[in-house]
Figure 1 (cartoon, rainbow, N blue to C red):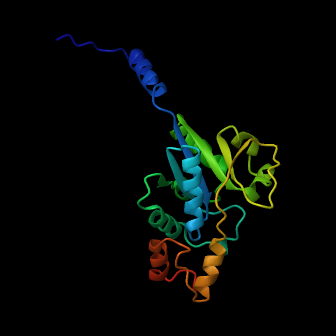
Figure 2 (cartoon, rainbow, N blue to C red; figure 1 turned 90 degrees about the vertical axis):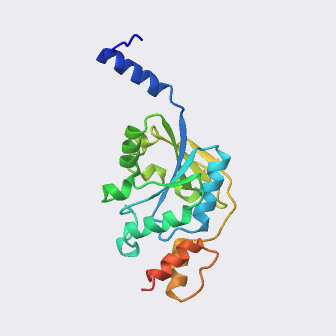
Length: 212
């Protein structure tokens, strides 16, 4: 048997060729505070993932949202644990901890630079609500961000699709649930059953979240 020893240059060329031949991954990102995650989040992620034929949809809790009052947001690790419970059992879903691990204010541009560096073969689809599309011009380094991701807007009645940036629009059943509504119901001692996954409801009760 003849064994060939490849030069370092040849090894690098082979590795580069192997990487270039890897299948392109199409991955959706649904970011937010998830304070707490609810069924509306799951429906959006599932609908977008299935309609666009994505390989994965990553739920990405932020560490410190740049435009939200810190006092209203509980510890990011608690929110991440609720997300993990919410998505359990769905092979399309996964948890992305990049922003929490980095800490500080969570700017999407910084996050996507890091993710593209780690996964250059991946095409990312950044999922946002129809109401957020109008605010894209105000996003941090938006002109650079649109080169890193494809934005996916969720159609919502009352919001126009006018934007100077390319956006793929997806129709998703309207589910009138919000995290603020759930927090308010918990504070008032009202039921949140069927508004959040059972595992999230149990976690909120176990850790006495949102009672103050």
